Length: 116
View (spheres, helix red, strand yellow):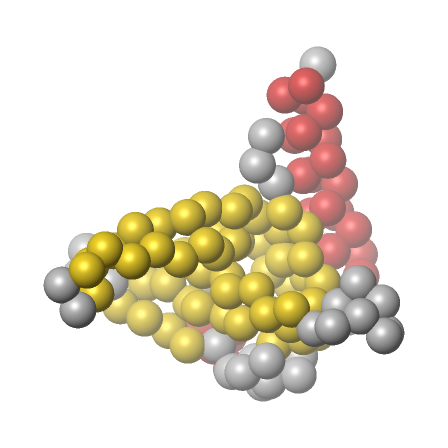
């Protein structure tokens, strides 16, 4: 099973990207900490078909991401490179507590259904 739940702050504003296929993806860098004294970790997030309003979020916005981990391979400078990132199914401002709880519960319910 491949499931991720992150809570952290945007370390930079979201960046919309138009792919050659015509698809839109919003890229986010989410900084997470396990505890106040723990070192920060930056997690790249790709969010396909994100609502346009999400592009306006500012650096520092606290978000919750529900999704999955993937490693993708691509050509860069004549070489094959890779990047590990989270592909978001849902990204919500952490202030929307009820919606965050519902999204996490949906993910848990799916996980339980798969393992049953």
